[in-house]
Structure formats: structure tokens, C-alpha cells
Length: 101
Image (spheres, rainbow, N blue to C red):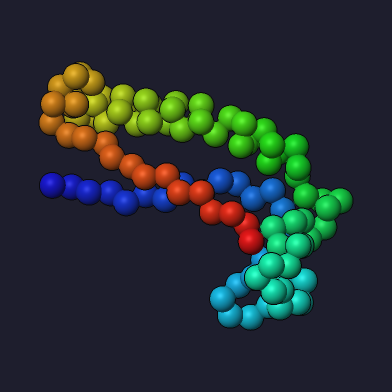
């Protein structure tokens, strides 16, 4: 049974203040777990706020189109109809969101 573990990552919209397990934030500070700046842009002038909003707004439709296309491509490459493919395999996935803190 072939298996694939693929990770799809959203684009970066800019650096944000974070609290890594070891070390310091890119700003040079070791932030407390409740620091209000966590997750905010390191440089608000260069952070792509519009891109972040648009990506998050369209993420559901992007995912739906990706999974539809994936099944079509798998069926075509296997020489099967989509129904025949569905009888032989199942595409399973999990989605995870990671807050930038």
C-alpha cells in the first residue's frame, strides 16, 4: 500500500515576533508567553497584511480545488475513471493551523 506524507505550507507574509523553544525572537528579545507583541509583525511597513487577508479568505476554496485536482490527476495517471479510483483508494488528509506566536 503506497503512502505519501506531503506537507503544504502557506506563503510567508513577513516576519513576526515569536517565542522559540530555544533562543530568542528575531528581534533579539526573549518574549514572555503572554507578551502582547507575539504574532505581530516585526516590521509593519513591510508585512503583507493584504496578502495575509486574501490568502486566509481564499484558503478554503484553494484547498477544495487542490483536492479535486489531486483525485483527477491520480485517476488519469492510473488510467482509471474517478469512480474507479474511488473504489480502489482513499485520499485522506488532516489540516493543521499554527498560530504565529
